[in-house]
Image (cartoon, rainbow, N blue to C red; front, side, top):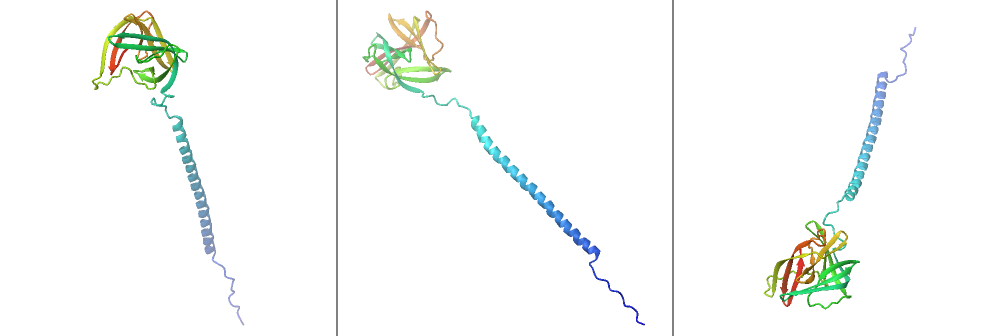
Length: 236
């Protein structure tokens, strides 16, 4: 009698091995998804940082330009002008060989007085070329006028030259008339007085607020010489 042999069953992978393979695949898939999400977050963070940096770079210069202060050394428009005015009156006087000559002008519908050289031959009604300059003196905005093409000061003397001289005395007189002109905040101020029985003009070099007519003022009388030019000038 033949006994049946052992029954062979189809072989299959151990359940535990399949489970481990599936677990490995699941873990690797989860790691991949996690790494993908992390990379996406990292890229987003980098992009956000770049945008923020670009925004700051474009904002800071614009703000710096907008808030750039205007310095006090900023230029005028321009600080010196060459203009002209019509002569209304000519003032003249002399003392000890020194002579004074002043021109009363109409400049921009305002009256001013410009000192001239004693040897000049301008007449009333003539046009006079004037150099108009602006400067700040002790906190005062001063408007100055000089005759001729250059802004040279008639009181400046070459002290090293044997032909130059300068001397100053004091005078006192009552104000008969006040002259005041203004342009762009800069002022010109001076006074008509009688000195040695002659009408002369005393300029205020600091253009301080004008004084009243009838007030008595003390002023400087300058006698300057350079070569054959002997000049008188008057200032506070």
